[in-house]
Structures are given as structure tokens and as C-alpha cells.
Image 1: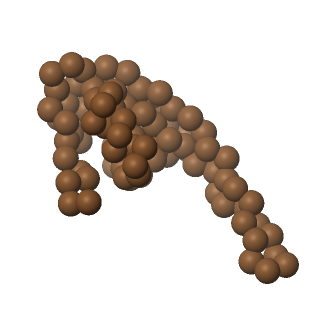
Image 2: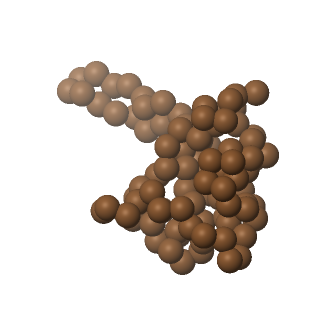
Length: 97
């Protein structure tokens, strides 16, 4: 079982992620590849001191990248959509954009 700080790698600060954050009360994170939904829920509740309603995860397949005639693949990674319960305060990690 990964430790609390190894479960959540980083928040995904993209246009889509900020739009979901504002409209659906949902946070988007890159998480450890072997992290379960329960571990992600516990990590978010502990780190941000909020209550989590649900967690959805998806495995993102790495794209093929080329450098001239050489090809390779980006690594696969896992994304988690964490919906907070109604009335919970949204953590502000993307305020200075």
C-alpha cells in the first residue's frame, strides 16, 4: 500500500480540469498507477481536510512520440476525478493562473 503522499502525484491544472472544478465541484489529480479509489479518497480527505463524495479513475495510455527517425512512447499514467460532497470548501491550488 502506497503512503499518503505517494498516492497523489500532482493536481492536473488544465482548462478542462479547472472547468470541472468550477462547475461540478470535482478535483482532478494524477495518482499512483497502483492506487485504488479508496486510497485516493482517504488521501484527499486527509490532505485537503474535505469530505469526498465519489472517485472515478481512468488509465491514460502513453502516446507515441517521434524525434526525427526515432520513435518511442510516453509512459502510461492514472488520472482520478474526485467529487467533493455538497457544501464542502474547494481547496485552492490553482488560484494564480
